[in-house]
Amino acid sequence: MAMSDAQGSPPQLAELELGTLDCVHCGLCLSHCPTYRVTGRETSSPRGRVYLMRGVAEGRIPLGAAVAEEASLCLGCRACETACPSGVQFGSLLEQTRAAVSDAGLRSGLAARLERLALRQLVPRGLRLHVFVAALAWVQRLRLDRLALLLLPPRFREIHALLPPVPPVSQRRPLPRSFPARGEPRGRVALFEGCLMPELFGAVNRATAEVLSQQGFEVVVPAGQGCCGALQAHSGDLEFAKGLARSNVAALAPAIEGDAIDAVVVNSAGCGAVLRELDHWLGDEALPLAGRVRDVCEFLDEVGLRGPLEPLPLRVAYDDPCHLVHAQGVQEAPRRLLEAIPGLEIVSHEDPSACCGAAGTYNLTQPEMSRAVLTAKMDALASVAPDVIASGNPGCLMQLRAGAAERGLGARVLHPIQLLAQSLAR
Ligand code: SF4
Ligand code: SF4
Figure 1: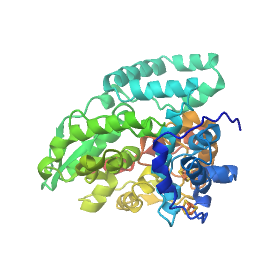
Figure 2: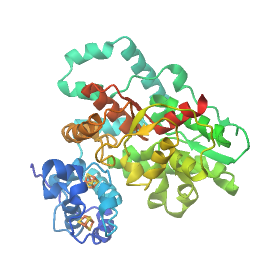
Figure 3: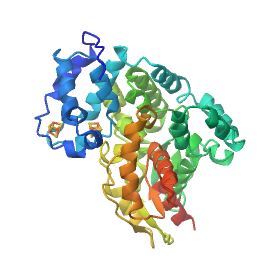
Figure 4: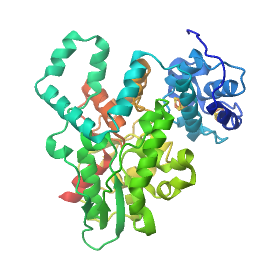
């Protein structure tokens, strides 16, 4: 491992020490950690990473290339948090460590600069992203991407395989600002749209709004909301992510004021995890929003589905998004909803709450580890031969879709809300 350590401890690291003290080195997290399972290295385990973080915070270990490498190799899946009996808040420790690594100039290569450019100047800028995706649609339609692949290095083929076909324009149109409650009214909710969801998974956002409306909830889609900041925070750009979070707090405040809504409903696990923990970034000003965030499956499970549900004779493998099961503690609600659909059979594959290897931009920045983690996931899924693989996060949907296509599995990859919408709409 190359060592070119930068000396000194930036201020963020002072906050690390307290969190790392919770670790009692029991090792119960090790077998749950995907990177430890692949490498067998203590330094690539949660315990090893906490040790490194604490060493950096106490000034015993320099903040340098070795720490940067382990912070980057971690998936941020937070499976270690679920496993940890001492309550180590690994996600938060990792976020602070990555920010410190970034501020120390330890992520300075071309790939890191391009990532930051895309995450600051493209992903959170709605109009630019819309134009970019529209251009990508034309590139795909004219098959120019296949032509370009002949000229570009193999690495780009892997990135290309992850890109889903851009959905038709009809699915990328902005949602109406409100959907009426149908039937006996049951309440009012706000829908959080996200940044990539409207462009690449518009059908999921539409299905979410339509199911909630059909279930008797008026749905408002507040203007001015945008990117949640998850991808930026995962890449170490924490202050920029906090700026995005402040914009969302301001955009959603009018809907939340005066208890005008029952919940802010989110269908992307990554966004939901960030919004739910916004007070960690912004303090008390974010509590009114953070306290109302519900994953769409969690919300529908809490209020109870109003039938009738038509049969869907499908074998479905439900795969837990890490940021739903480990960061938000939502595990049974999506399964209960799917089980309520007549004719639908949930087939159990091995370790459904293990990471698929998507992890934000991880599949682009750490392709080898991402591929190793995805291979294990696809082995488990292939063994139960599902008709549908269901998961509630855009990154997981893209990663699982790419994995299924490469494996030659005929399974469709869908968000659970799309199956519910199908069953309710007949
Ligand atoms: S977040 Fe995931 S990859 Fe990182 S240490 Fe924890 S279990 Fe391992
Ligand atoms: S389970 Fe928790 S306390 Fe035990 S080694 Fe892992 S992080 Fe430390």
